Image (cartoon, rainbow, N blue to C red; front, side):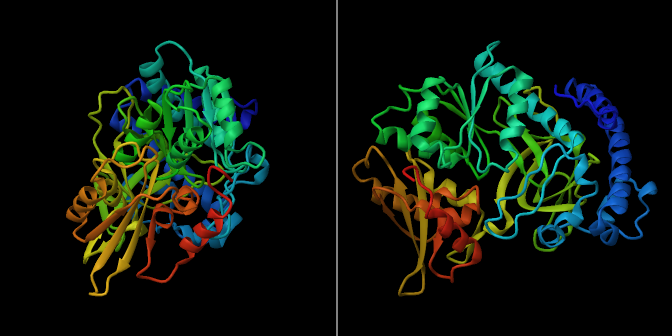
Amino acid sequence: MWLPTSGKHRDFIERYLTLHDRYTAGELGEEEWRTWAQRQLREVVALAQDGSPFYARHLAGVPAARLTLDDVRSLPFTTKDHLRTAMSDVLSRDLDEACFFYETTGTTGPATPCPRDPREVVASNAHVTESWRNIFTDVFGDRAPRVGVMGPTEVHSLGDTLGDVARNVGSAVAKIWPYSPVIGFPKALQLMRDLALDVVFCTPNVALSLARAARDQGLDPRRDFAVKVFLVTGEMCTPDLARQIDQAWGARTYNALYGSQETLVIASACAHGRLHLARPNYIAELVDPDTGAALGDRGTGELVVTMLIDGIKPLIRYRTGDLVELSDNVCGCGIRGPVMRVVGRTRDRIVLGGHSFQAWQIEQAVLRRIDHSYGYQVVIDRAEDGEDLITVRLDLPDGPVPGLEAAHAARVADALGVRCRVELPSELDPVTTTGAFVSWKAARIHDRRTPVDHETAAARRLAGARGHRA
């Protein structure tokens, strides 16, 4: 495990890693976790009040030294709009203490600064390291696989984070950016073959775009590549979408982690394909996405996190905007922490035929009983009779099975309660490649019932420079 040489950080990190080792070994009891979490909560709130101009105002009058875990729900929320408005005023420590500087992509608003110091890096990466060890041992045994990391931008944390994690587990890593003008898809595919990469970390869309690009070059993704594992993140990936990646590559696909530039890694995957909350690093709550009312720490609701690592940018009661399901850990994989299932963004709910659907329900309906698809898009219209009508566009590189369009249109219509038709274009709209940068909804749903919103406009601007042939 990487350790900094600075004594200022090292004392905390050694204390943290001792706790982490006991946590991963199953030796950290509930009372010990509560003692740790309460101490860190007080440290984080006091630090933020003293060092962050935003939190000095936002948490004015909060008695940091007397806070208990039961008091967390009395603290005000921190929102994405707060972060976009406050920018560097959210930071609780000076940039001189940072070891990395990142920022959000800025596709739908100002790019917000996300520096990280050694405390945050080590604490976050420790849980991803355990995740990789768990999956790699299950798939590769004692052999350390070769890993390719495909991230979105040069100022995104993915390359540095996963480079450190690969070093922790003894794997060679190649950082390959297929949308980079220097690399591109042909070079990315060449490197995947030349290096015989075993594992690729990317978004679900990139995994399928790579398969499409390989076929366009006359290559067979299953035969001509060594990839056995796709670790995906950055956008929703239901089991039905993961199945398309598995079929394209003859690989095993895992929802590898959940988090963001702002929050770091909140949950990471196990060999059984489930996400586990990094409990030493967060207090997790669920709230009603519409009212903000507390729903406890189990069940389904919008995820709210309070970061327990007193680094440069700890966030307190941060509303992630994501619907998740939290449940007790009965996984049996060996990874600790509650099990998390990501349902989708709170804003990605869609009304069809008078009924509200979550993102995963739409994707499940579109891809259930579909095999060997490289992507999809849903177009929503208002028919002349005033009823909703959806068109499902599927990328099926092997062509349709006779009768598929009518049969699948009937299945989707039954699942979603609206009329449906199915189209099989030769190539999908490039906007479908933008999900990790903007949102699943802007990338996958073309809703012609309503005016274009700012996220859809941003996705369409970005789509002009994307696609596996770009």
